[in-house]
Length: 394
Picture 1 (cartoon, one colour):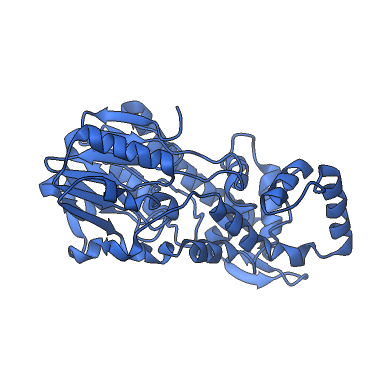
Picture 2 (cartoon, helix red, strand yellow; picture 1 turned 30 degrees about the horizontal axis):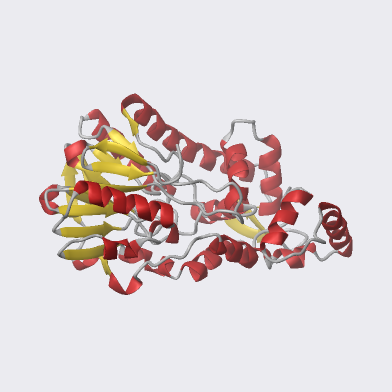
């Protein structure tokens, strides 16, 4: 498998593979996207980002032949799903239009949006406490923002020790969110989301009830039923998934997020989406699923069924694990201490271990932010400990 590889689902339906970053400051997180040719319409299920995915979109469009209409159906407002929106300029068609969920519009100002999301943790935890990056990794990060050859692992280790001894780490920690977001955004290739030409799905009309078999959704229908866009709102505000009845195919985009990684993530909605998808599989209306990120590539039948159940189980396990950690501290526990305790107690294959391992390629100490979001989402009571840190209790 390689970045932007084209995976054929059917003669007129494919997905274009994404990419998971090795390090947050070296390459971007690129989603898997979809392309479908209906009777006279070419549908783009998000446009991804970067020249490789752009080329693959154009290759598929050429293979499928000229369409009367090209529709970009956007799943949500995150930049990695919108970066190639201008690709329609190179696809021949009489009509071209981009639909987007209105609730996701704040995300169109990507840098400000993600900075605000990530800085949400500033009052609650220390971004550097528990950040176990080795000196070589820190050197790579520093060189990525302009450090010269004197930034050797040895020198960086000495600097770190001096900063620690000076007691200024908590103050420096507050600058980390902005730095991380700046670095992350700089890894993306040039994007053109065409914000001025984006139309809200709601311009068609309010989301309508859509029934597939016995399963009820809410959203919009295109091409006399060729494509349904279900609004699910799990991963992000307004988030949508795509259903192609012809091939019993459901594209989740990022709606597989079963833990609250962002302030507008709603895991309960993700669980509901997975349950509805399982109902459709059981009734024979769904065979193949695909997601924007982990798991990215198409899954069918028993493998798909197992993966959807794993997402549900993982979401519920995370909530239960955090609750258990909170309950152990009837007087309240701060996020830094809760994070440390959960990491220490986590089994090698547990959800906490997985989340800790995945956080660094994208955002430093991202698991702490997720813990904050979970505590706020569950409505745990807040207080202060002897050091003045915000605590949470049941």
